[in-house]
Image 1 (cartoon, rainbow, N blue to C red):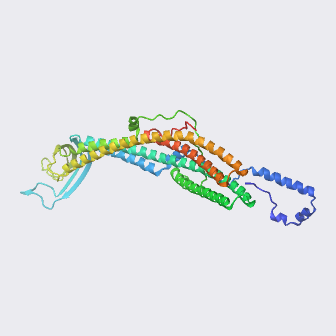
Image 2 (image 1 turned 180 degrees about the vertical axis):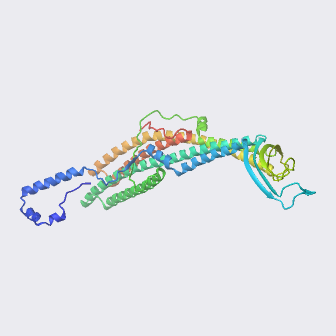
Image 3 (image 1 turned 120 degrees about the horizontal axis):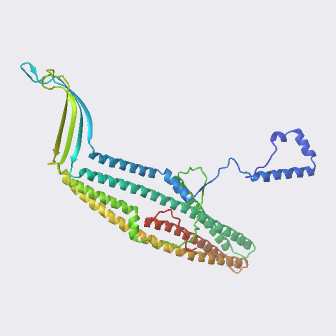
Length: 470
């Protein structure tokens, strides 16, 4: 933005300024004008202090912001924390439970014999008790194993959430790059059509071109502008999604930094399906669920077994029969210890129903694991084939662009010389724009198929893809 110097209004209204303006010779006017021009040229290069500078956002920066601010990731991390606490809660079954109790009771009638009272009307008891499970046929150990499996599953869900959000961010980022370049291609087509429209209008006025040629050019131009408008709308929608994922304010200017042009390196070799099965988080999560289901089935089979618990307590109470001290209200200390064997005899068919439920859940989890493995195998094959096809399309579409460019240049020359019709020229311009969009689509598809192949193979997404052929 250029700053121009102007005399303030109050200065222009002064009498001295008016007289000076009337008496200033032409040479002084030219000198003053030159000074103003020099001042404007000097201040034109100065940055505006109030101007907002667009933030350059790379793919790495977008992923980093997403990882720091995503509510879904925060929720998944809290899920891991909750699973950790669940493991600790299950492990508490191996430790004793210690409690302090104090009781008071009043009895209005107590046992007496010949005036001798066997218990006080006011009874007090204060003691510390400890109880601990000694043996439960491995039920506590199974509960800990199930909780640990849940902790592992929560970790896999966190990694899955992070991967899916990263994949969504990558898709939106490259969608915006593609739309930005597609808009540039449409602008080139619009510029070419506008030039053709000017030439056709001139030839129409000269009587060389027909009204049909003029209308055909105008229709092609309007269609190109509509396509550009659709691309701009889609770009704006994708920008809204990217701002949401990367936590960027709506009013903050944004400029993406990236392209589809990447360094050449050897093509990706298809990974074995067995390696993908080992790396994919979906398979790991399904396997963990199947493991937890097996442990739950084993735990359900032990619910009818006995449990042995030991307890010990120490405290002070009154109400002891008289010996050396005839006062029943005297507080005396005592220690008790014991073992308890608990054997469930009838639980209302709860144990049998729990076993059937655990068995059904185990079968379902196993089928989920098989489904996950089959899906991974299919994705590896599909993405490998798509990657190979998109790499080949880059070469073919690049050749197509070169041929369409030569054809368009030839058609322009022939049209200027009256050797080609307007429709022929419009067809070649449309073919050139289509070829450029096709090449852009092929490069975009290669990049996205590369990321999709890494995702299907269980490899890290942020290993920069490269184009083998251009």
